[in-house]
Amino acid sequence: DAKTTQPPSMDCAEGRAANLPCNHSTISGNEYVYWYRQIHSQGPQYIIHGLKNNETNEMASLIITEDRKSSTLILPHATLRDTAVYYCIVRPQAPGANSKLTFGKGITLSVRP
Amino acid sequence: DAGITQSPRHKVTETGTPVTLRCHQTENHRYMYWYRQDPGHGLRLIHYSYGVKDTDKGEVSDGYSVSRSKTEDFLLTLESATSSQTSVYFCAITGREFNEQYFGPGTRLTVT
Image (cartoon, rainbow over all chains, first blue to last red; front, side):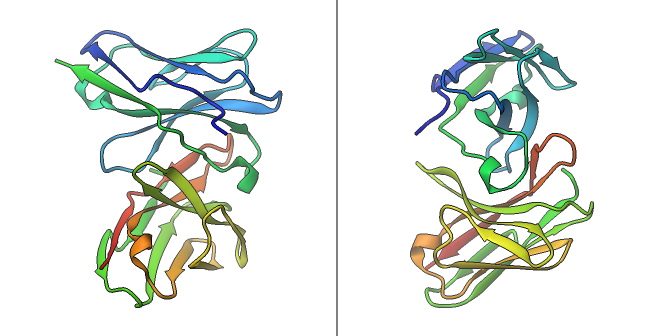
């Protein structure tokens, strides 16, 4: 019962923006969109999250469509160290088991020199 | 990294032996989680804790038990390890403000 769909892979050139799409057409009103990434052999790393407004932090920007059915994670200047699997997850903000992380297959981003 | 450490980082053990994995955090977070990650299955929740002595089961809790006798430590025990429990185990805590989760470095467990 995947709640998000992502393409399996994409690549971009170092220094260019990487735009990673995610579809979440069944998102509920109380669910947020979270993005994580996992670099090979490391634990998942939180990147950013949002409800309906666009968000930006030191790592990335998150653009959520007005109908909230899709979003795009933007890494403005990708580096080789950004090569990783990126996961888009929808979940309530409240902590507990109901907000457990369910990771799908994610999208593998390869940044080329 | 929210001050999360896991020990051991690597372990090889034999079928039938007990194994305990430790997750330690230094920032007094209330919620802690144990996940396992396997190829083709992604990350799956084993158990979680919402306070000292307060724990609950996740989706793949069979064969695992947990304990949390103090805020900073969350222990995962395999009472009698099986080969199907060969996996990478991640501990996580929940951030205070936005329910984002921060993960430890992982423990790679091999049961032979």
